Length: 233
Image 1: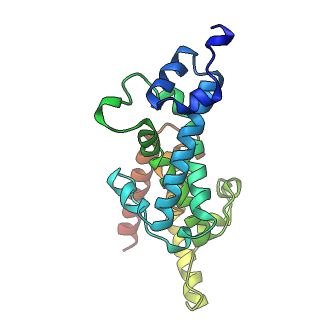
Image 2: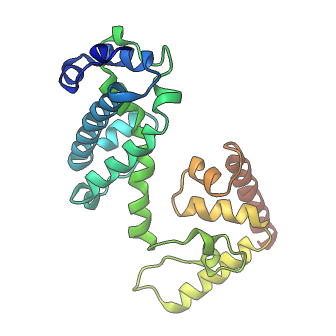
């Protein structure tokens, strides 16, 4: 491409997203056109998602997409909406070239802009990013390294109301320890991570296992817990 044929930033910003995408493909996802496309998608998605988190509509949008969330009003105030949106958009950008911009993934003829399509693709990342501060609020900061330690007290952690009798807390903690003890270490790890609110996809990543493995481990763990409970009755 000659120097004269290279579009200026002004020309790129005035181009339609569809025309810009064609140019990006021609230039093999590099150069000013690629930078402008990313800027456009990020700007739209971050603004839209931040507003949806702030007004609470993100809960309905995620649920319709199959990602259940519980409303938390604290996350609707600074700095959470912008932080959650930024984390989600950044995660989704990693899939932009390989997953989102695949030929046929977005159809400009159906009336949905690429900006809107990209934003919808961010929803699973929004759900995960939304849950992280909820876990911190509920349980405090959690170190994965300490959680994966076989002798970590995190395995027997009981989150209880401050008004509960300390003796009851100790009894509950002992019950949890005895209940989890017969399980294999990997099953215990998966069960505790799920208890902390991590999604199945997160668990697979954190434990470095195949995506379907958490389902099998959690199912096996629950089955063994039920069997142990029946034996103790």
